[in-house]
Length: 80
Image (tube, rainbow, N blue to C red; front, side):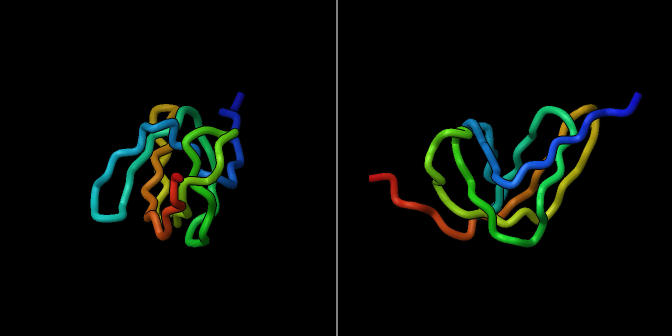
């Protein structure tokens, strides 16, 4: 029996993202997930929240039942 894959079209951080560069972040997600690469997608804190910005995923790694995303935040929405 294979591992299930989940297709995601937004990045949901739940506040777990780690900054690794000026606008570059790494995020670990549970399970194996597919995301679009090299196109702008919404970044949200939770699935229900408004987008907090727009990111472009540069790299996806799968290991130990986790998906690791490296993404660049290309725009930030104001939080007024």
